[in-house]
Image (cartoon, rainbow, N blue to C red; front, side):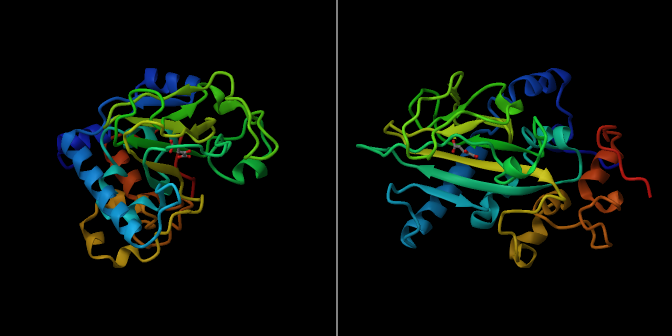
Length: 296
Ligand SMILES: O=C(O)CCC(=O)C(=O)O
């Protein structure tokens, strides 16, 4: 077993029983100070550069906001966030080794001034997973990590709204159409966070973005992890041909959709030894019986 750098040691530290219990109860965990000053500066600079490119290309919304899907494809400098030591440990602790990033985005939300028409933002992640799965509650299937790259430590700054404990509730009362005014759901809270804090949440947690009525531009990025047998929604086609691809770690390549060593695993997990995260965890005795390999 190769010696690990301190960062890698942290990446491969499972979440604690207390963290798991809180996550199961609330549907989310806040990770304070996940990003240090350098990480934060690096991510902010990269996103602001991508924002200027989008602006030059006429791709901003009427409100000058940017909601850019496929975070790493759109901004390769963000790749370090996929397996960041402070947060990736939650993704694999909750979902196991057969995971990839199926959905991600980065967001820039300048202040909203004046009247804005009502829009009901509340949702669970996963799109048709919430129509086509028949159980109650529906299964977790994915978790998302959000990194705050601006100060949302006070309400009204475009904070994420969540309803703690709502991840086991299939249905949230809401308006018949998203443009019909409807009261904020009971139990909703604004997540207050400093730049560099992160949130890990169950995709089923009912959540919504709120309007940014502050003078600060809100910056954030969200990375969603799911099982490798759930299709990747991000646009990752052509990434292995990019110049920076060879500089990525095997786990980062796995997370971006690369299937093992090409020997036939095909994401179903029949050849776990070809899956980089399985190997990393197995080498350190960290495989969890909740996620056993298939029997040949
Ligand atoms: O931008 C936000 O605060 C909310 C993001 C969101 O709804 C999502 O990631 O599904």
